Image 1 (spheres, rainbow over the protein chains, first blue to last red):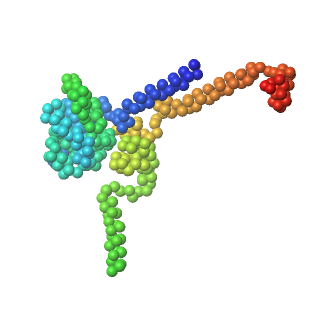
Image 2 (cartoon, each protein chain N blue to C red):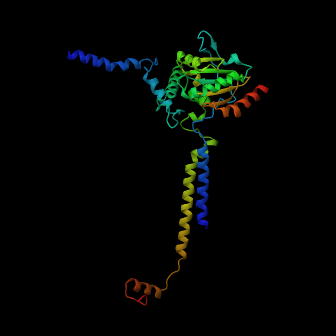
Length: 175
Length: 159
């Protein structure tokens, strides 16, 4: 009897480990920037290249930075959700137009609606690297003191917005 | 006529090269390029996670290599650049994990398993030796009987 118990035990432990492994997403690398000061930048605006935008302009506000590009298919799927959020005026959404062609980016906003207060234009993707962006879309939540409080990797979903994003924004605005 | 055709053909061959020049990244310094590649081998490509950015042609990997090149050119040290990347992308970006308390199991787990296996092997061998020693010995009479049975001379076995 005993000689079966040990292999069975080992097997069960292995199954538990593999089971947990199945529920993890290796593509989701936790950002070390959480609860750190948002990396600063100064970029031209997408709509008006003579004006610039940077995180300092938004001190004292809770805001979202949504990294997007016209060539990114998942961003297009996410886009209607952002437009809807913008309409509800939940939180100011700023865009980081990442490695995009200015005309393509503007065309997308014209055709599918513009949820952004403003979009910064990161042609070379250097600001993206500075923010640890490795797959678009990504959405950062920045608090009033300029700290990054959360990062959504990949497209937002209605569930994520309802269960995670909105409570977080309420909490940050209340504090 | 024929040579004209050849010239056109050659021009067509050269055309893609003219296009490849679009990116304005200068790679004219072989010493710098070598340093970029060496450092890139220590950085993980987050899009294709089992590759280093040196091995990968993913767009992000190319961007990160450019960033490495830029920073080396500015005179930053290898360690400074690694620190910068870790601050942005987390320790996961290091292709070779750091040795620290949370990664001890990763680094020394295999050694632990090896030692465990050796231990089990030693215990089993000891037990077996003990069994051998405890095996009942045969008397001279029994030896003779066994020998005769083995040589096929009947004895009193099965008829």
